[in-house]
Structure formats: structure tokens, C-alpha cells
Length: 427
Ligand SMILES: Cc1cc2nc3c(=O)[nH]c(=O)nc-3n(C[C@H](O)[C@H](O)[C@H](O)COP(=O)(O)OP(=O)(O)OC[C@H]3O[C@@H](n4cnc5c(N)ncnc54)[C@H](O)[C@@H]3O)c2cc1C
Image (cartoon, rainbow, N blue to C red; front, side):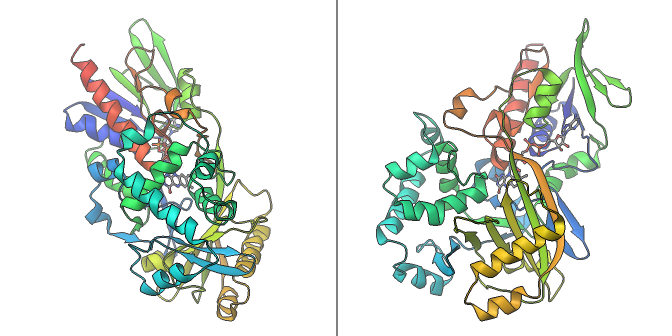
């Protein structure tokens, strides 16, 4: 029994590993020159550049099942964020977990954030921690914005914290994404750490792929052009003319490509983003926290000195800054670097040391990402496709059967493998 998986992102890799563990003969075909799909890292002149700013929540259930977290050597962020607003910086943190005592104290006594909003945040975390994921995902849904308003958060706090924070996670500053996504992410944040692996996010994919790669189970630079049914089953036609006829086909590409290959309707919409990397000689803040731009005219949504969290992301003595936009800027690279620095100078206004440090930052790289996630409006979870399709022997593994996240991609890969193994027993 031979299964062929089209796409070596986290979903395809997880599915392949699970099938392999159950003794199914499996091959992955991947269009690009490496594994990981949206989770890849470039190593350039001593810098570790993830292809788009991305983090791992180590509480993700599939991450705990599938990855060797010790080997990834996770480098954690501190909880909370530095909120930049109208020339002020406000530190927000989890008073129960932040290892930085000064930040804890500062955040507790800072009255620029209402104590009621701080209390509501704490209560939300406690409530979500006490719920199972199943409980959280069932029942009626609404937008994240409605949900936060229903929970009594002030408009000011929503603007200062939730818009830029979830803007960064879900690429949606308007908070129109399903409240179930917000709740799930909030639970993960409350239950574990936010981190990057020592050698970059791409190491997650490499770890999943390594045993398969070593046994020649992955064909890189191999693009499926189409799949088609003939009398003797479903076939894969590759760019270049080769035709393959495995017993089972798993479509593990992004949703639009699955729709193109199979004709099956898929979740629509594309969240776009850009990550702009700069390197500098000095750090302009010292915390291991995200820096959120809460200004209403924000050009960048968030920025982070990755080397505060993981010094191995840059050569010794250098600092690596990544800045994130929601949507893809249409301006030139030079203009974009300038816009990022202009925003950062405004965000750190009045901090003379930060201004001097920022003056040392130089352009390094830009990643414009046309498809980071699909749209996740309220009610989405009930409409997501199943791992099984109408086509004989054709299955789906991809984030789009669950939600749009690393965890969702891996869960989908696991569920797809289970469906195939169950069905194979009937063949
Ligand atoms: C910038 C950015 C930031 C993100 N931040 C986070 C985050 O912080 N936390 C989080 O949980 N999630 C985050 N995500 C989302 C997460 O990365 C994705 O949900 C997940 O990686 C999707 O995995 P996948 O395997 O479903 O799809 P993909 O990663 O898209 O993999 C699909 C694979 O199929 C291949 N392929 C496509 N067409 C073909 C073809 N015709 N033939 C052969 N191969 C093909 C592609 O090359 C690719 O390797 C982020 C995504 C981006 C881009």
C-alpha cells in the first residue's frame, strides 16, 4: 500500500510520519527546494531569518505529541508585551509568571491600564485554562471584538492591547476573527511559553522531516500539476510530465492549491503580511517581550528584538530586529525600511538611549508573504472540510481542516493519517 503526500508543510510531514509509524509505505512530493512550507528559516551571514515572524506556543497539544521540544532548545519570550502609544511605553505582563520582577511590579502599579482590565485579563486566562479545548470550540461563536466587549473589556484596553496583539497573531487588527481562535490562542499563551527554537522556526519542520529524509521518502523540487481520475484510480500528473498512481493521495498544500488540484471547495481569503529584518549594534530595549504599536496610524503592527530572546539569531555583538506589517506594503524596499524606522523612532519617542541605538540599524532582508493564514470568521469551525474527500483514495491534510495555525496543521496531519489507516483496513 503506497501513500503519496503532496506538500511537505507541517501537515504533510506530520501525516507522513504517522503513516510511516503504522507501516504504510509513504512518499512526500514537495514543489519547493525544502521542507516546512510556511515554516522555514534562511541562514544569511550569521543571521537566522525565519520566513516571516513566527512563534511556537509550546502548549499546543500537537506540538507536545509530535516534537522533541528538548532538542529544539526553545528560547522563550517573557509573557506580556510593551505597548507603545502616543510616545508612551506601557509594560503589560502576567503577574503570576513573568520572571522579570521589575516588569511585574511596574505592570501592577502602572495605572495607565485600568486595574479592572488587568483583572479581567487574569480572569479570562483562569477561565480558559479550566476549560478543555473541546468545550471551548463547541457552542455559538461571535467575532473576537464582540466577545471582548461582552467580557467587559474597555474600548481603550481593546485598542491598546488586543488589536495589536491579535493583529500580530491573526493578522486581524479589526478583531473580526472567530472568538474561538482568540480563546484558543489565549489558553495556549496562559498554559505555556511562547518561544523560538535555538536554530530558528524552520528547525521544527526539519525535525519532523529528518527521519523521512534520511530514508529517501521526500522528493523536493517536484510539483503536482493536477490530479485526475481514470478507470484504474486517481493519478497525480507532475510538472515535467511524469504520472504517478499511488493507492492513496493526500493533498497537503495550502487551501487554494487544494481547491485547484481537486475542485473541492476550501476556506477562502488570505491574510497577508511582511516581515522586515534590520540589524543593529545596540539594543533599543532589553526585555524579551513583543513591542506592540498601538498607535491608530501604525505602519508596523509589532516589532521584536529577536536577539533579546535568542542571541544565536545574530553574530556575536549584533542585534536582530524583526518588524511586522499587516498586509503587504506596496512601497519599495528602501521606503519600507525607512517607514519601519520612522515608526520605531516614534514608538520610542523621549527615550534618548533607544533613539541612539535605533540610529545604528541597517536593512537586512524583507519577506513579503501573500498567504500567511486563511480568513477565520465567526462560525468557521463548523464549515471546515473533512480529511476525507468525495474522490476515491484522496484525503486532505492541511491547517484548513482545523484552523490556521501550526497546531492545526499538525492535528490535521494526525487526523488524516488516522482516517487513512481506518479506511485501509476496509480495502
Ligand atoms: C508569517 C507567518 C506567521 C505565522 N505565525 C504563526 C504563529 O505565530 N503561530 C501559528 O501557530 N501559526 C502561524 N502561522 C501559520 C502557520 O505557519 C500555518 O498555519 C502552517 O504552517 C500551515 O501548514 P500547512 O502544512 O497546512 O501548509 P503549508 O505550510 O502551506 O505547506 C504546504 C506545502 O505544500 C507545498 N505545495 C504547494 N503546492 C504544491 C504542489 N502543487 N505540489 C507539491 N507541493 C506543493 C508548498 O510548497 C508547501 O511546502 C504563520 C504563518 C506565516 C506565513
